[in-house]
Amino acid sequence: MCGIIGYIGHQEAQNILLDGLHRLEYRGYDSAGIVVMHEGELALRKKAGRVPELSQLVAERPVTGTLGIGHTRWATHGEVNDANSHPHFGGEGEVCLVHNGVIENYTSLRDALQEKGYEFKTETDSEAVAHLLAYEYREQLGKNGSVADATSCLNALQATLKQLKGTYGLVVLFRDVPNTMFVARVGSPLVIGIGNKEHFVASDAGPLLGHTDEVVYLSDNELAVITADDLKIVHRDTGAIDPKVQIIEQSDGNADLGDYEHYMLKEIYEQPRAVENALRGRFNDDEATAVFGGLNMTAQQLRRIDRIVLTACGTSWHAGLVGEYLLEEFARVPTEVEYASELRYRNPPMSENTMIFAITQSGETADTLAAMRECKRKGHPTLAICNVVGSTIAREADGGIYLHAGPEIGVASTKAFTSQVTVLTLLALFFGRMRHLSYPAGKRIIRGLQSIPELMEQTLKCHEMVKYVAEKYSEKNNFLYLGRLYNFPVALEGALKLKEISYIHAEGYPAAEMKHGPLALVDKNTPSVFVVPKCGIYPKVISNLEEVKARKGPVIAIACHGDEKIAELADDVIYVPDVEEYLQPLITSIPLQLLSYHIALLRNCNVDRPRNLAKSVTVE
Ligand code: AGP
Image 1 (cartoon, rainbow, N blue to C red):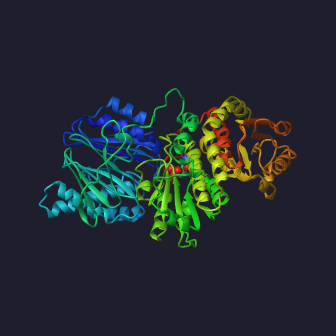
Image 2 (cartoon, protein in one colour):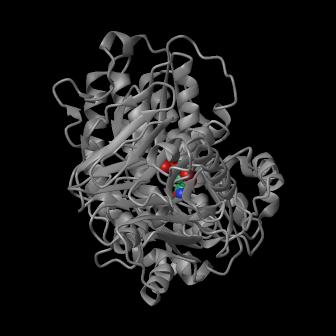
């Protein structure tokens, strides 16, 4: 949520900043802006709208200079307009900053600063930080005989940070100190790239690729003072610390669109490969179990686990619900999936041997991070199932499992969902084989998982039929998504996909719950998408479907090849390959992803960047 970039070195900053913002745009795309230090002045270009619009503005009015900062915004405080775009200035322009996060006490700070005569030009919380910093800077200059140097700036920054409540990733420039960039973090990710006589700062490592592979991840309560040749890191409480330099892979995992029109479509089609990657090296065939390199727990410790709590948000929560069903079925370990935004403030009883898994594509979701920290604080082993290597959650977890799905750029999560479900299936196999699951049953699960990439390829062949269905129903304004057992989370996920990218109201329900209320919504204009592949309770789901048909509700069925009966009942059928029940979410979710994609296109919605949303939700 909000992308930050900074550069100091010997190259023109403008292009590096714009390119970085382009790569960070998935974090927010309400507005974008840069400031470049030019002949002792801070030259500002900012604008509501997307990064290409900022690039256009910069092309018309270029800025030269080798030090600069940039920001792409997801609005939290203040509407989307030019003024509220970052960077923001403090005082009379002597301080300039970009901010990611939320300053919870900004109104009291603003009131106090206004009383001191500071004039606010925006509705943002960030501007309060800029003015406070200017105020503290002036205080430092007063103490220091007006010597504007990096020490005065650092002292001012430290004094400012002590007064902030909330979260921030900040990159700051001081007009009178033209060769230094200041950085601070609490709760919002920042990574520093070390180049040859140059440094980069960004919200994630993406913008650094191609520039450097040496990075330092800033931790909470750390500040950095950065010049072209030098990097100093200071902890708020303990003083200077040695930067921990890490090497990142020099591959962006193919973040280009290639021949696809949208990232979402590309990522839907990448699922067979993503699942292959999630499975690679994770089977022990001889013992019919799964292998994980990063759990960082002994077999004895794992054997003692008597409860598992999965915590996540959005799509990752839906994957977690599949995980709950899988872990209870195969490992017989009581499992619960908790919304991270609730868990962080709830206090559910957890036995001493409860294990926590935070499930997250980005590894930066603020609620998931807070829930994870709360559980960690209570002493539970806390692990992550995460896609982005080096993300905050991945780094703070006691151990974990990476998805290896490659970058997911589309805001609507697709390949991360199926990769998460794949990893959770492996986890259920792993815990199951430590407990009650037999060798032949373990073997069967392995064979089932190995067949998935090919079956996903076959599933993608339903694309033309999905297009036809999308055209038929794209003008409807309400949809119901229904499924039972393993396909109930799929129904939830299908409804979320439709909502987020086509702005159509959609509800996911367990099919049998319809008669307890939602059936009242059914009429000839409300299509119901029934996820009804072959399963132990297939006849029961068919009864639920008939109840909808009896009320003249149009029915779109996702069913298995060879199911002829369904064609007589449903208005439209999208056929998918038949797989064992516990593997069905990996298959049945695909037509639902494609359906939301095509309906969104037909309604002229921005598929990859839906309104009001951002890929990585780093605010509470
Ligand atoms: C789904 O399509 C979403 N955009 C959203 O629900 C997402 O899954 C959620 O914000 C959690 O993100 P994470 O997996 O990166 O933690």
